[in-house]
Image (tube, rainbow, N blue to C red; front, top):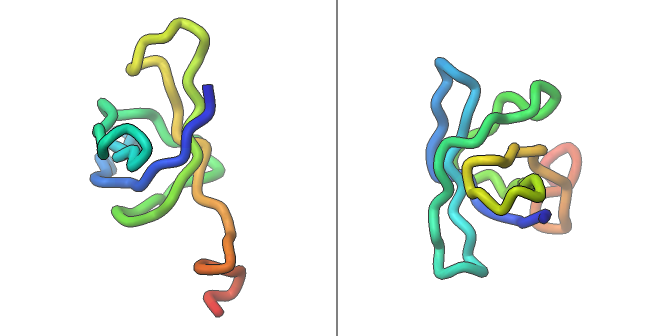
Length: 76
C-alpha cells in the first residue's frame, strides 16, 4: 500500500520519522525507517510512504518527499 502523509516528527538517531495521514483523520504512524536517498526529512514535509503486504502499520518505509506546484524544484 502506498500513502501520502505529512512528517510529524523525526528521530535523527535511527533515521526514522512519524507521519500523519490526513486521509485517515490525521492518524500518526509509528516510527518508520526513512530511505537513505530521502534523508533528511523534516516535520512538515509531504512524503510518500510504502507499506508491505503484511498489513501491519510498523512494516513500512518513508520513500521521501516529492516536488509539486506548491513545492517545486528550486523552491519557487
